[in-house]
Image (cartoon, rainbow, N blue to C red; front, side, top):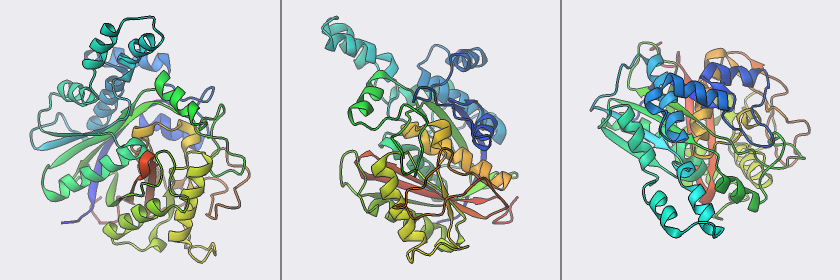
Length: 394
């Protein structure tokens, strides 16, 4: 059975600071948290989190970030704790990498024996991040780990909705957590995808992406006395065109967005904003732009029914598997504040990307937005989010 699912709480830890309000203010003030091309959570923020959550202080940064964001979300939703009828879904691609990459690098440089690396690697399975988070939350119910590249958190949000709609769980805590690591940064460097300055999505002169770290979590439930917004549609697709590049015609992204609109029972004309994946890479922005144009503006005639399209990654960077959750927090705040952000850093729109860019912050209440995400391996995911008044439950 398909029905809108309420979002009742949210929390975040990003390179901009701790908490959704700091993240949102960074967007409206166009203040990037990216430094030297990377979006790191500051040392002062990490110290503050360890002081605030001493029970998580000894865990890896991914777990610390996730626990802090989870507790923020649960506090806003007035969830004292999780119980056996709840669900927990975590998205990540790096997980505990910070706990074993030093041993690997030392081993590869022949400066260490195999045994230390084997020991550290053997005891840092990717699933341990979810296990540690569950232990800190004293949770033993239904849980799931998603590692589907950059679309992981967006897929996790969709799955949380499906779990509630199907009756598998009554409530679900869902989010993503990522850490910056040497292996990740060097891997993206080898692909020539990184920019040393804050990214400029959809700009003619865009030069690449900014990797970042952090976490965001949201509380989902069937009904809420004080909903922040509603998750009303979702869609998945896989184009499997290339390991690290989307289909150049955006076919997979087009299908994911189309499916999200179908499950939300909406026409494209009812969407006011597309929160794009918009990483700032040449291939990604071009493919996503084509998909958005084909879905929302097939006649290539921009008008009042054509949605605004923008990306916020200049502000918070690209947190890989956690990006969909971080941007979902911004989607909620956009609906609540009746503001559609512009793409910070966009000065010369690429003429080959025919979408409607906000010239500045767009003010005014609106009903529906769509969040789009593209991931390595052709993993695509989208969701539709709607304002809290749409179903008269606010």
